[in-house]
Length: 179
Image (cartoon, rainbow, N blue to C red; front, side):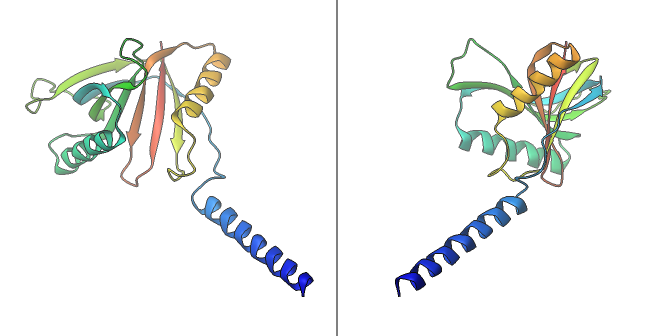
């Protein structure tokens, strides 16, 4: 009788392990995270800038508002978030710019009310495509470390900001630009 209980317990544990492994696999946990080195570009981003204490709920709400602006056509381009490295605001705060980006925007003088624009240029881009579900995706710090290692290998120095570009299929990419 005791042996039967041990066998049932072993089967239950094995089933739970198989379920956990298959869930992790389905969410993209085994997808490789590679840093691609791409040629430089120019980018203009139209949006709104925020410097505030980081609260995920407020940040998510701002992303959704910007997504609605892009989907409605008020902002043209790809939904983009720029995170700036800012040592003067404290460890519990964040400096970011949310809006829409295009490689070339010709008429920045016709901005929607309340919006500003920022222009960026680089010779080399370090890009990571994020296809994993948020539950199994590497943290921003881990991605930053991978990019930093690749930049050192390439002999590049990174600028103090990163881009997150959100695609219609709900995936996104992270870009760091060299100086």
